[in-house]
Image (cartoon, rainbow, N blue to C red; front, side, top):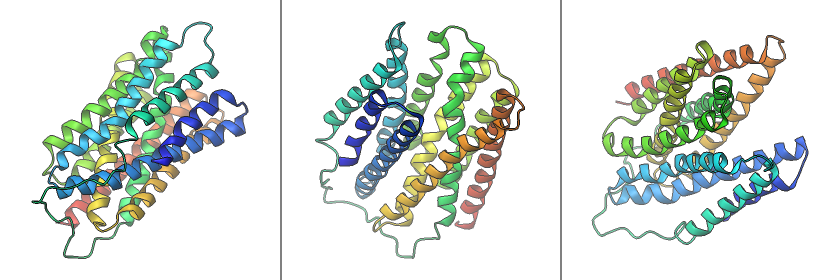
Length: 311
C-alpha cells in the first residue's frame, strides 16, 4: 500500500525536475514502484480468490492496468492543447494518480475473509522448478516494451493528425483491459502455460507486423494484438507463480518481476545500440521489433514444451 503512493510522487517529480539523468532515475523508480505494487496486489488477492474458488475474478484485478493506460491516453489527448507544456501534463498526471491511490487505498491490503467452504491451495507434491518461468516472464518484458514504447511514434508517421495517432495508446489499453476479463472467465479451466504461449505468439505477430508494413491498418492491428495479450501473459504468469509456490509466492513473484524489468531495460538498450549502426532510425527500430518478435516466439515454444512436460 505504501509503495503505490510513491508512483504519483515519481510522476509529479518528472514535471518538477529536469535533466536526463534525473528523468532516467525517476522513470526507473516509477516503473519499479508500479511493478512492485502489482506484485503486492497479486500476492494479496490471488490466494483469496483461489481459496474461495473465484479465480475467474482475477481478470477484473488485472484489467486495471489496461484501464489506466486507456484513461491516461484519453486524458493526454484532451489535455495536450497548444500552449500546455509537458511539465504541466506530468504534474496533472501525478495528481490524477494520487487521486486514484487515495480512492483505492482503503480497500487494498485488508485481510480478506473467506467463506466456510473453501478449497485448499496447497499442493501435496513439491512445486516444479521455476527457473523457466522467470526466463519466460523476462522474455515478455523484452517483447512487450518496444511496441508499447514506440507504437504512438509509429502511428505519428502514418497519421498527421495528433488526435488520430494519439488513439494508439487508448486502443492498446482498452484491448488489455477487456482481454484479461474475457480470458479469466472463458479459459479458467485451460492450461495456463499453453494460453500464455499462444499470447506470446499473437503478441509476436503484432510486434513484427509494423516492421514490414507500416500502414494505419497494421498500426491498429499491432495495438490490438499486443494490447490484448501482454496483460493476459502477465496475469497467467503471476497466477502460475502462485500455484507453484502456494505457501508464500512473494519471492517467486519478485524474481519474475525483476526478470520482467531486465527485459524492459534491455529492449530500449538494444534499439539504441542498433541506432549506432547508422542504418536509419526506422530500420534500426524495425530490426529491434523483429528481434523482440523472435524472443517472444522462442519463449512461446518453451512455454508450450513446458506444458507438455508437466502433463
